[in-house]
Image (cartoon, rainbow over all chains, first blue to last red; front, side, top):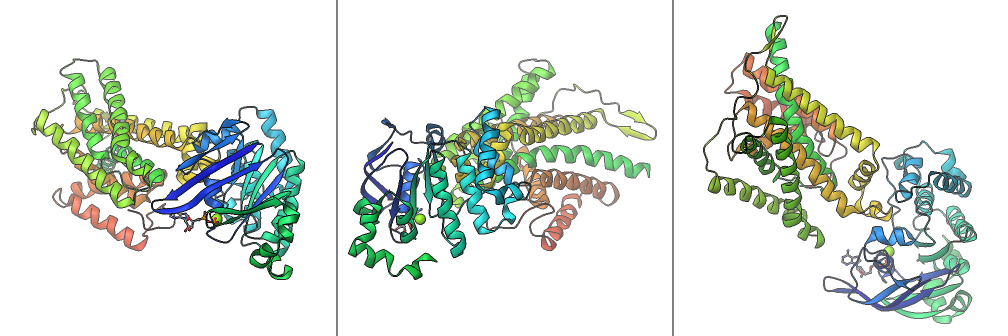
Length: 239
Length: 292
Ligand SMILES: Nc1ncnc2c1ncn2[C@@H]1O[C@H](COP(=O)(O)OP(=O)(O)O)[C@@H](O)[C@H]1O
Ligand SMILES: [Mg+2]
């Protein structure tokens, strides 16, 4: 579904991605784990068209992906960004409706809104609340719901569990599985390697702008060097 | 009392034109987070476009008005493409935008001085001078037109921003460009749209202001007032810009009427600065970040 081929991205002189390749197949949950600064957000922002590629190419459904964020959305890729970026001045429902900006079919939008509220009952309760007054966990749900409202088939998620209390982290990962059950494909970027590897089918390990390991999530999870670098003990990574 | 009402109506009329200018400022600020100092130059061109439409081309007023506003919308877009877009693409710091804006402003002003000349020119007398009597009040026809046209433009703008899909895109982009792009909004088009709207309003303001006073190359300096009014009302807030401008217009006229027209600007600005000291975000502004 998505093929990233040997992409290089730099910020001025800083090389953030040094030849990254990866594949995501329809219906999969693929995770990219890596430490802070490894280049995870850079990768997602490059896919979404926010950053220029130095070289390499990105294909989506066997076609070159457009290089402008709005066209990437139109092509069917949605992105739950790092830091959520909800419209803090709008209500929960208006945030969700912004997600449907490119869509015209009112009936389908209403149906998807119901779906999102089904997935996040908390958002339904807070329909008319101003998004800026939501808790961090609720804002994360809103950011996910808003992305789903674009009706993209591939969902990019940038550290959805960041800064959340352990209980909410579990909820977020449960929801990721539910989103897949809706027929979506997910590319999940996480520092919380333990949970991410549990949820994912396949995994890539990103270190300083390079993929250093890849394989089925269970295998990556069992890899001694990955265990040493990213997993530590279960208890101190779960939170 | 009559004199007070008289001053008040005059103040409302000039304040509404300030509002047109300030809203153009605020619109661009809300999206781009910098003060578009080239706005004054665009207003000035609007005044000249209207003037030449009426004199050289002998157009009927409506046609000259349409020409002027379409012209300024276009000029505003060109300014954005030439002076700001290259900076946006390079994610340049805000200071560069301000410098570029000042450069564009100086260019427009000096271009007009070099090609048309520095002398003020009066608009042809299209609107009869004799006022309309309303009880004891004498309402200037031009003042009335200024107020009605400005109010109509501002109302349309608010409806556009509030009710249309593109208006929603503007609101979203004003909040956060990246988040808007993630919704599928073409933020580059939103920027063009905002400059076109600001340019259109600049054209309206330029023609009205030129009709009231005269046309001259430094007419754009008046935007310093609308800029301060926009800050006073709360930069980035459209209702704030309107309120700040109308208040400025009224304060100015009252000071000129009751105290002295020499102190008009001085006292008006002292009051505005006083308000900003007490409320740095302006009357309706949100939390202040350090933006230029
Ligand atoms: N806007 C930027 N300008 C310059 N360098 C950046 C920028 N964003 C990220 N970087 C650098 O690129 C590298 C990768 O960053 P990022 O993709 O944010 O990592 P991650 O999301 O894995 O934490 C880091 O070294 C970071 O400092
Ligand atoms: Mg990141």
